[in-house]
Length: 271
Image (cartoon, rainbow, N blue to C red; front, side, top):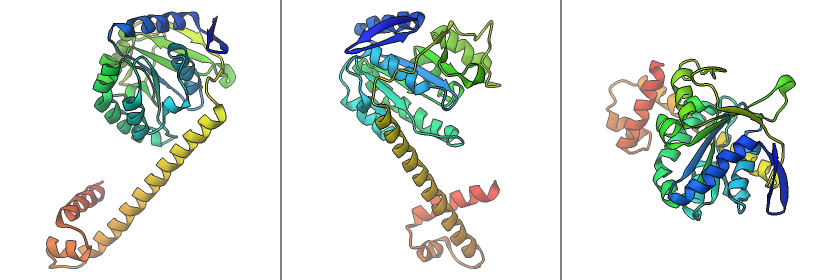
């Protein structure tokens, strides 16, 4: 590891990782964007390492350039200046991870043209590399940094895959969600990182928790709405002779909305 100085901060960074980030800092000036992916288990230190990388690439990086929701991400991209770092740290937890990926993928694909035009350093923290949209995972990202824990759950370890290696990994590892240690799909190198945080950790945790709670509240409301609508449709099924138009009238909703809910009801009923 080597010591680097950014603004008033000195911190240690893996030498090989620094070399790759230095290449990215040079190439981005040739009218490119630099998109990096990061995955790993919850709590392994993904956000810490990625914030260090974002700060090293862009000394002006700050907590306001960390997005926890699709809307925050879009706003950060639209407000960004050239050659600045944006971190997309989607707020998810546990079983929400797979559902979160659909939002991450849709948001990323829709914003890639803007990211390209602004020549940004983009760091995407995802639950799993194998769930990232194929277009992003293989063709639009420059590298994958996969964070893991050592013996006794010790934090501070990562594996680095360049464009060629992450493509191999996606091809050979996606079927069984496995990361080969050797041969095709193995990393270019492994490294260590420290727990240095370039932004206020308390404020970071506060913002992420707020985004996570909002997501959970939204999910709970969605589930409650679905359950309530299911109950109402169940009752309507017990009444024979009603046209769909009449049922929509009873439910006090436009006929188009009624058909949308009916389709969702039928899909749930068939599961």
